[in-house]
Image (cartoon, rainbow, N blue to C red; front, side, top):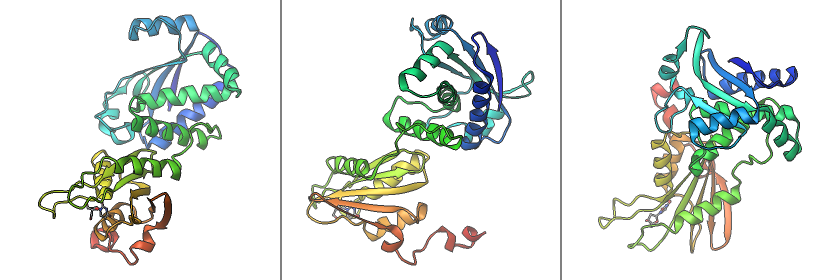
Length: 300
Ligand code: THU
């Protein structure tokens, strides 16, 4: 990744070189194969305040501002939008220009002190945060925020600058989200409410509940609701699913085991009911399962 620097406020060379390392790691983690460029301006609080006022109508200094050049389709990020990235080729940079970042050095140094870590780590974090915005991530909705934090964490941990507070979703959180989803069950016929929470590799969580139908046969289980929501939002890699019900352990039905196996044969299945919990790998629930790799095309 080419960083085109505009330095109005200086930082030590070691910090600039860590930022370059972070930018290269970000492109790798995002899966951008093309050479990309980003302009990075290091400035004072007063300068970033002016930009924040002029472009966002917020008359105060901040740590980092991002001005992406690409508008990614909903749910898509740079790694999945090669045509858009390619379209941003810039002669001068001789690379695909993703946008501009502005970082206040005063804010950077003050935040490093406040959080008790090195200025270099704060510099890497602010750059990575800004780059993620240029890649199309944001943190307005809770799920988008988890996805962005997971990507930031992946990049930063890859260069030894992990952020402790970007904790992964724990089993306990996933179980709580499954119980919450259970409350939204539509089950007037069986009166057996089920909720699910599906954790994706990229940190997103999709919840689902069972949705019954007067025709009975059209009922959709909580697990498949969650899987279909995830797939239709562009997520296909799943690490764990939590399922909640009351009265008995809600191990997934055969159809749901098969659907989970399609995308995530290695997924962990957690169940919770009446204050109890248990777990098993899908492999144990669907031994010798039939999946995409059994088909001739899948083997290629
Ligand atoms: N159900 C689920 O949501 N998940 C399962 O894996 C088993 C069954 C729902 C479907 C139906 O609404 C109710 O539980 C009773 O079968």
